Amino acid sequence: MIYARFTHEVNYEDFHSELDDYIRSHFENVQSGLQCDSWIWVIDGEDKVEIDTFYSHKHEVKSPNHNSLLVKRVIDIINKKYDLDILQTPEYEPHE
Image 1: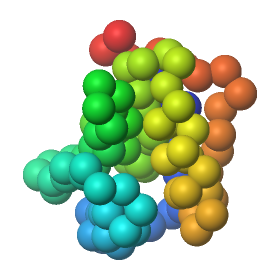
Image 2 (image 1 turned 45 degrees about the vertical axis):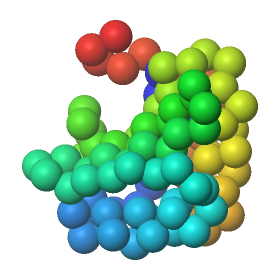
Image 3 (image 1 turned 90 degrees about the vertical axis):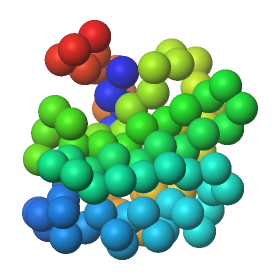
Image 4 (image 1 turned 180 degrees about the vertical axis):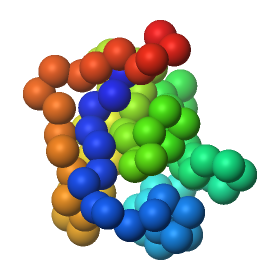
């Protein structure tokens, strides 16, 4: 499910390192990569939030867990520094 989208006009490849550093400064268990797409995973126990560009040219905040408290924390942290379009009703990803 997609919970939020970034609204910036910056190329995601140029933005990846900045966003990755910011996320890592707020969460302990973070995995990331930049290979054709940008992806950052925030993991807390069994809960995982994905911030990626797999189906968009802008980063999207996603979680497979419909009741994720982690996705709310991640969105709150990101929204303190960056503008997000927070979806009132989460959307299914194209591959779901």
